[in-house]
Image 1 (tube, helix red, strand yellow):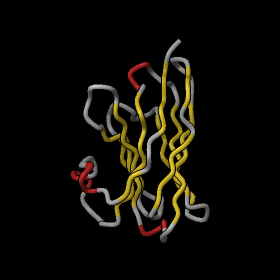
Image 2 (image 1 turned 180 degrees about the vertical axis):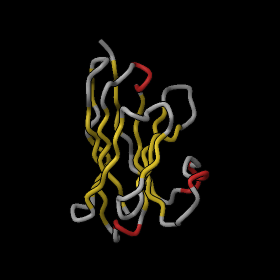
Image 3 (image 1 turned 60 degrees about the vertical axis):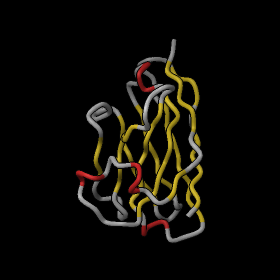
Length: 126
């Protein structure tokens, strides 16, 4: 499956952005999908994951209550709504797809994901 992330840009602290991840090439509903992010000089960090059917989701503590992941399998797209943005949310955001059902304790392991998008830059600054 090919993934294409979009929607990044510049936002002010307290503002909002909505990222999209469009999939092609395979049955998108066969894959759980996640968002990771990476800031300069830091390791790639897990943000959130949504199940194949879109009925369960999991968030990193750093974004819980501010970010919302959703998906529309008819449109082969996953979304990340980011509200109350903080400067520390500044990063390149990547979407990733995982075809293997697994326990939530392993959701944050980047090596578990089979496919990755190219990343979209989010900058939070006044």
